[in-house]
Image 1 (tube, rainbow, N blue to C red):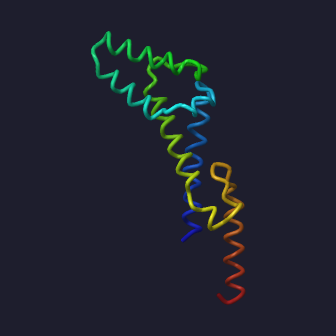
Image 2 (cartoon, rainbow, N blue to C red):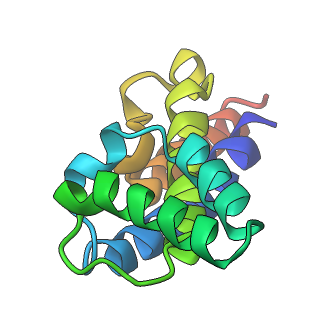
Image 3 (spheres, rainbow, N blue to C red):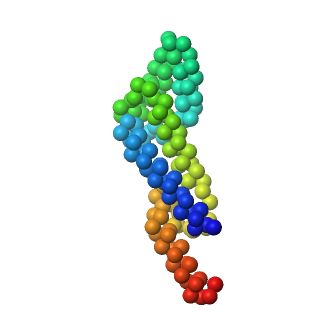
Amino acid sequence: DICNQVLAEKEQVAKHRTLTEDLNTRWKESVDTLPVSDILAEWRTAKEKWLIARSMGQKAIRKRLNDHAIAMPEDCESDLEKLVERQTIANKLEEAPHKAHIGALWRGLETDFDQVNLVFEWGQQARNHLGG
């Protein structure tokens, strides 16, 4: 049912917030403009190479990321994975069909799930009182 579908997104919003809190200590908001899944793939490809090629490949990637970093980690793979996960969550929530069902209550990452829950409970009580 739509209530459970919408409320299930609360976990994804919480996960996005946790990732953001962690990543914001090392990355600027501008990192979200980058194709991080492609960069992660490049990082992993470079990681599989011999020492000099790996070092040069990873150095080139870090150089591209440098303008978007507050504190660049030496090994970017973990952060790139988190950035990809955060971007995936944001895209999924942006494309979620919930706005068609609950209108302005659905605000993606900014959704107030307590308010959504109150509205659903009110609707359920109204149906019960009306005999539906």
